[in-house]
Image 1 (spheres, helix red, strand yellow):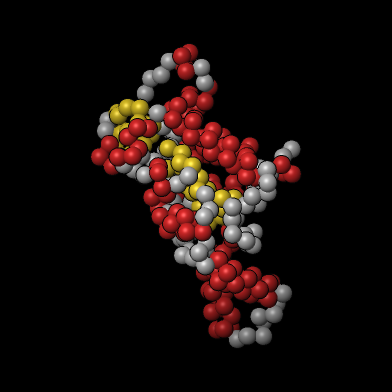
Image 2: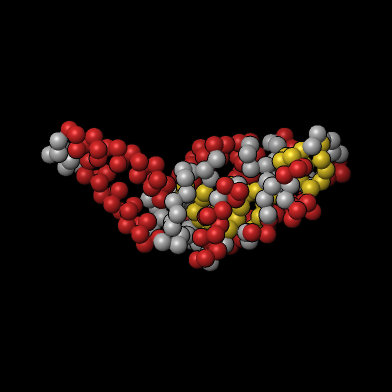
Length: 235
């Protein structure tokens, strides 16, 4: 993809191309409502319009900045392999709740029950750390350890989520339709990074971009990071 950077007058464009942000899916998989965001097609792969991406990012950035300035809780969701580690590290860095394993149905629509299960997990984990489980037989402890491991995968990212989040930030809505539906039911706005196979009208703040590339995801988060950091956390 060749672009005259003298005419774009925007250093971000070059960075986006180098990070692979502009690459979508094959043309045959393009969602009809995403067609207006396509710049071109090369070797049957859709290329997302650079200006469209920046416009979407800036809109999402303004929204996130406004919300976090008021102390909003941003819940990050990414369960596909390319995004899991990146999102987990980013969320931990800023003390955001996150979900990088399979979405637990009811996190938003049945939060009270999910919160009770999380508190049970934390209580059991604390008992183990304090040695209160030593009184059980070896067989019982093995069973408890398996339960803790299973619950740890599900709840480790939700420890800071003590109330319904104010914003849902999703990488790849194609894999998180249940999360998007739950957000709509409880009235939580969604910011989502999505490729060309998704419907951008299903969320409030869609960001058309390559959502299956580590470099692309990292670039998007880096661009949005200033708006995601709470004022008290800024250096």
